[in-house]
Length: 77
Image (cartoon, rainbow, N blue to C red; front, side, top):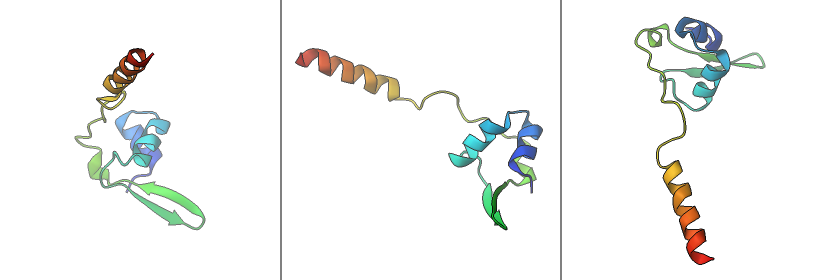
């Protein structure tokens, strides 16, 4: 098993990015374990090969909903 930092080094991505992906549940097979008082992520080494970065940016639909809100507020006032 790899730590989050080891995984980040293997896929050449900054550790904070991997930590965000882990908290967002975007790395399948990753498990958070507690050792003493520390919580550590454990990632299977098999995830390194063929790992695909999650898409960047906002989820689709966010921009559209903001436009709708703007249009609605203009129509009211």
